[in-house]
Length: 336
Image (cartoon, rainbow, N blue to C red; front, side, top):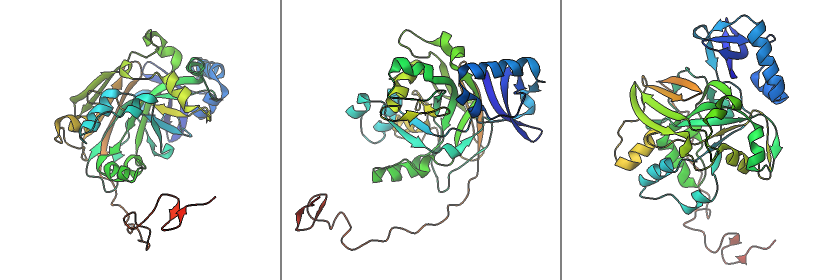
């Protein structure tokens, strides 16, 4: 099934997509509520909508993010992307990257729809896109094996992790983040495609063999295939569930694809800002085979609200501190 959340005649609805039409669910219900009920009830609701509700043309609705996720984990699973960005810093892919599928938590309140305008983050001078595919959890679980994890994925959608690269560079020097660099907008859409729809694209290693492309103002910037991932989505879900829960509606992003999946990779490989950072008026269009297309236009953002710099406290600077971590100057190791 292909599922959508949308606004039509001022009302927020969810439904099943067939061709160029949406069949709304008979009773207003959020898609994440149906997902939480399980795959079979979701299929039954979709069939009732397809046969029993009056369809609406896709061109007559505003597509919203398919769901409002409670959590969003964004991974880095494309080696080409990691290598290209690292090259810009005179670095290489760290050994730690190969050891486990790294991720960070991003802002679930920043989701925007497939065709919504995206504002430049406050204070950003190097705005960038990131082409990703995201898996959506349909059943809760913890400490899953990759084999068990497959039944916990309800479907897939496109994710654009909009990024303020200049803010990101400053933030990550503090050994945290990214934070405000990724906080303003994340596109999710256009639809949630259930896992069974994409099963014919699965290769022998368990990867979904889907073509990915991104254009800026009609010009092709990047192309890759989802099989370039270093881990399958099932392995990512298993790792995410280690020692904790994954629950219905949780989103797990693949991380940026390689071969131009973002501008930062290209900047890192060439040493020049070409193509240039995004500016208001630019339109970024992303397509993923079997899932669809999202297209967002960049608009002016807001001026950042001033926040004063840190108050320096006497003796707290790393340049002034003496002794080891956990000790006071001259007193030796801290005691429990």
